[in-house]
Length: 111
Image (cartoon, rainbow, N blue to C red; front, top):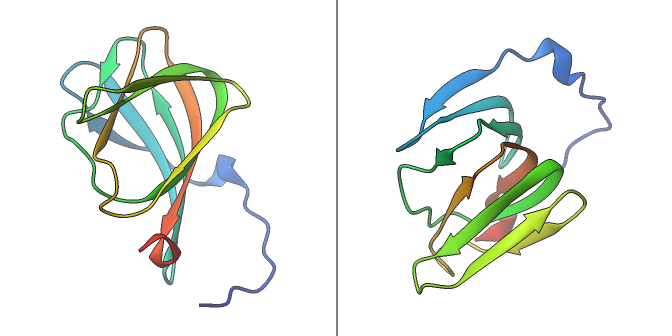
């Protein structure tokens, strides 16, 4: 898919609430053909309610979080750090003690 130049004013995108096992995630989502862009804010004490198989590019904008893999590995990411994973490569879930704000990009290019 090709996308023309466009600016995104995140302040105009209303967040949706997604509960975790503990805490909540607020998603501001822009869905384009084959591409999803999100600003995601996890509340302090957030733990995802599922293991995710989807591919993502995740960039930490503020705070820090743990990305845990289902093989037992865990990685702490801080502001300015990024991870990338393709679909069906490494099941993962996120948690944060103090809260975090992320830019998450996913789509068909990560299959």
